[in-house]
Length: 115
Image 1 (tube, helix red, strand yellow):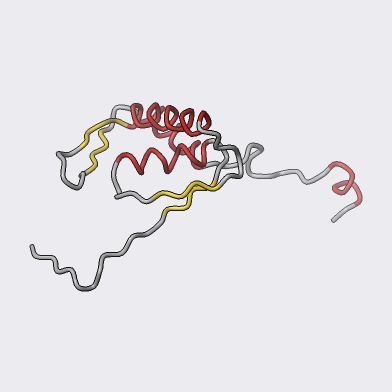
Image 2: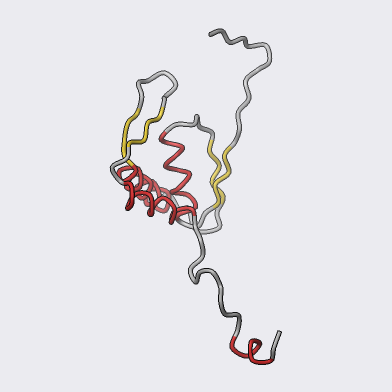
């Protein structure tokens, strides 16, 4: 490292703002907002939406979490099926600076599934 680079700091970084997962959703909602998102629910019909609407729902979920007292650096655990609701939390929680901790639920080995 040269003396000059020590005094002016590192230059040539790839980007100035930090990369956050919510930025990916904002880009997709802006560039492909009308593309359909389909989620299969457990005992309900399919949920259909668009990326633009999902971003709005994630923002609404983030506001609700903040109203409940969730702050940046807090941990938020979820126990949910992989549906549109969990998809929204996947962006809402990190979007406010909190950490999402999905809890994986396993089925009992004695339970049998048939096609």
